[in-house]
Length: 548
View 1 (cartoon, one colour):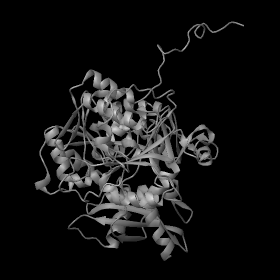
View 2 (cartoon, helix red, strand yellow):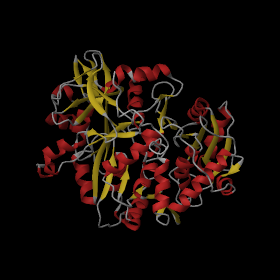
View 3 (cartoon, rainbow, N blue to C red):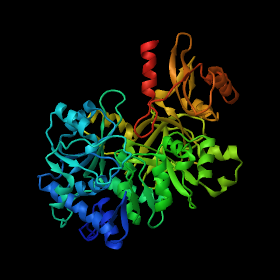
View 4 (tube, one colour):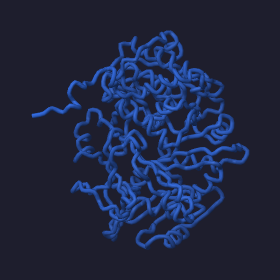
């Protein structure tokens, strides 16, 4: 029996194999571009040399607390330099970074701290009060470090709270040496971060990322976003959300500049774009709405085109047109917390730009093709685990396979096994595959409305609603019905200065949809959204549980 000559005496060693890690991106940027501005925050300017030095100081300070591989360091920070330093300094020690949603209540925070077995906690003083309540409820007793943002804006919506920790962040890291030799990871499968799902039913699940996936996302984000050398990235997407879609690690690949923004408002965004030459940003549709509906005195002119990555439902035609006129090119992405954020991109083809507007919008509405770092994307029958025909009609469950799929759910083997059933990650999203290989979502499995035995896609109805110029936001959910089982109910937010009746909305939909798909009821009200701008349909469905 002959041996394989390509495996004989050709062994893996330190010279020809190193575990992938996104920490290498910052290290290279600091070596190649040490004096390039890495971070802008108010009047603060931080070079790549200093960014790396401060991250190493944080690593040393954390390590001095006997924190290392397998330990969890939690942070509750807005989009600030400390959050960027945490993404590098904490994993350098081998510890796992746990970013907490800044909008959570004390009970939810306490659950996460306990479930993650938090050892060290870094908290911005804006959140001192809620964190103090959470710590009183939690079983764990982490070392607490207060972050006092020197560039706290005068128009901040919340005042700073009193310190609640044993250390001040700035003093904590400046007392440590900047001489730190990274040893993590021993294996690229080592965990780098922990992100919790929204937990709309029961407790949230802890999604675990590894160094390999985060490193590959750095390259993939650069490609999918069309980033050239030294892009300028505006932080409107919260860094606590899927680790900011891994962009805290991504910009080091191309020596980019992070422009921090503690909270989203139109004037600050326009100022950053005009004054710092912002080239890229990511955000939910609500960010587009804020930009487009800003009063004229808050807007600023800029001569370049800004790439805007969004990953919710495809924006309606009027929004896309408005964004283009305002100087933004919208790039449609799709993904989940379990896929490190975006894993699908609507990769635009030049010939589509020549299509008539309706056909062009149809192309824009699709989620797209797999990220360069994703090995496989499919629409499958979850029962048979067979791929559905790529006909643009047959609905199945969207499934993922590859290196940017989570390790699994922390301390939840049953949920992990179910998510990975059949060797694929089950997204819970329903969609179709088009003949050209582009994916289009139809709905979440739980959001499909079954009326009289017919399946109605809430996304399809919402698309029709957004075509009305008076409608700012819309969400469609199933309303229990004695005769039909369920019927579509539309929740609608109107633009300022507009008025519509329920009949106006229904008649508008009847022009665009089959009659059985049209809303039977319309409720005009503010629609609840998450801190990242996603509509919380479960809250709308819950209203019917108590009223019907």
